[in-house]
Image (cartoon, rainbow, N blue to C red; front, top):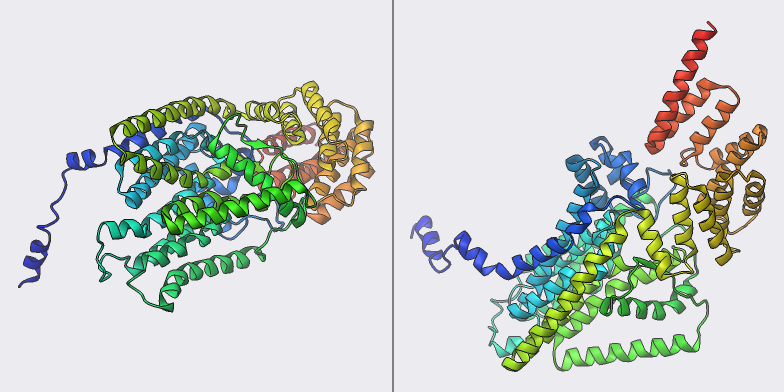
Length: 609
């Protein structure tokens, strides 16, 4: 038989769908995607805030394709310092470069991109739930709840958190690649009489494709490593009856191992380290605080009231009675879930794994972040996919109980959907700008000294010194021994013209052995500014020499040198320093100051030929 005729005959059993038929068949996932876009459309009117400024607005590396090799070959914050960083996220960096190429620095465009990413994640959640259960109603309910869940506002409405969205999309795509028939649930396989000859089982190349998606998630955000505990297990189940014996485990794990090893090798080549470089807390604090923080995350996921984006939680440096009680509860809960998954429904085990495992890296960040920045809503974006799978399973079970149960399910899901929609729309107003966000954090966590310092910084940038100093003093009362709080207080005192008080605080800070290199550098620069204002130019020069010896590209270093040279009347040197500041950080104020000094220098030359 001719090849062409054979091909034609082979297609008779699978007629093509018309666009209208496709739209009709996909109306449920398309409707949930439309809801996701509509609910988050308020974010289009939000501006940049927080890390958006150093990471996007003032980052020349994501504003020109000439920096592409730099983005691929350096840490995420290389625009700020030559010091080795903690994060290597090349896909996220290139994503920002693409967005700037298409939309410049228009905030609405960046927010639109995040909304579209969330729409894509919603579609993937629907497809995964439908493939696993075969229940369109359950998949639609799960995707609808996922689309409007208030816990997602921090990830979707804050531009710099789009790395969380990218990681989730790649992780979900990796899962969806594996979830082709047969279904993961073995009981459902037997119920539908799946073939025993392996014809319906997962083709092995799909495992490699899933591993590629997994690698993309790693390159978007390091926490994608958590999926290494889930994806190989799914592949192992899907390869049953197709690969026998030890080969099954090898084939399920090998692709992900290769991708992981490749990522770690590249990360090492770029950053010369795999682990993080700084630590705020000990590993003991991480371990003994983990149960209470994990409970906090679970509470926010299932009862998302009083959200603020970031929170303050008590830490424990030693085991307590509460720690042992909470840990015992988790152990017992895990045992029950495993027993239930093995005895009744394996998909409940998968849902629990998706909820719990992606949160574990969020617990590890306790080590590197300070209070007020280590517990964040955005870390629950991927775990909420597991919660959505639970919704699917519950609706699927209820759907089989008859009409009254179906009506009850529709009523409950509708109430949750409407409540979450209202909450999500309302929550987005706190992402309008830095003042709105930080004020909300302080409202929810009145003991958050870090948020007070951030709010004080915003007021300083706006020239509202009195309000700034008020926030710095409030933070100092909460954390009188916190070195970073003292640093912010010194800045407020300096802005208020209280140079003597600022000098005393900064000199005391420099004596602290707990000061990190970056904070020491910043403290040296602020003290140099104070000495310039006090007229102690020799002391300021000595401080700047110390800072330059430590890191000659530290932000504001060359700006402060320029101020010193201006004060000394050395205009050519001041001009050169302001230009260096602009080259290193892309700070537009430095370029404006350089232009002003150049005009002043030209006037001096004309007046004194």
